[in-house]
Length: 288
Image (cartoon, rainbow, N blue to C red):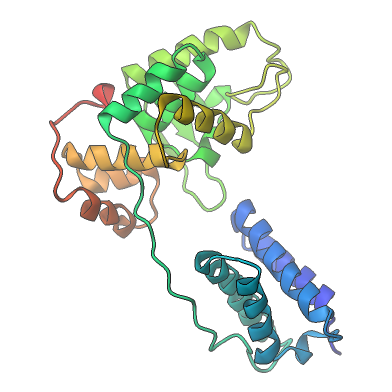
């Protein structure tokens, strides 16, 4: 029996969820395929078996004409290829129309590494905002991911460690809290006690006691980047800075890889190319 485009899209989304892919990945892939389905449906085709390479090429051409960057197009191609691999593996289609689609070439920008002057300026700028200051210190002192930080609870804060729960494919781990991070957290927790915090166990909350969401964190730190005069920086660059500066300080790469939760040592090794011509003193974590 022929599978409609809508049903194929729904099955693909369920497949991604069953594989416990990161929520952001499921949403992104699902939206990409929804976009493809809408485009092809407009041509009059209704089932997955009717799709050929011609329709996919037309879709990609439309993306380019609409101003999508090569990087964005490449990401959508990843979604398309994953979708049709699943369709073929499930026996829904007999041939994969996306198998020979090639990714456009584009330049991958290296991670942005903040200098000491920059991250100290960021600290100074947000020092009066105890909540954001604690968040910035955690990023700089532990290398935690923004999604991991947003999911922290008050119970994850131990005397000298921070518990990072397993989530969205990232392994569970405990990371040390140095004096800088612990002091910043303690000051924030003091004001948290006096706020409307009973509604949530989340570590970082809004003034109304609700969990601080990832988009809230990004918006706040982006604002402080602008105030501090730090250009072309994003929240994830604080994690990059943690990794790069500790490699420069001589932290063993195997130790660092475990601290930041990289699944593969090769992921941490990529930073070595960024710091090969840079050196720094062998600092303690408190001094980052």
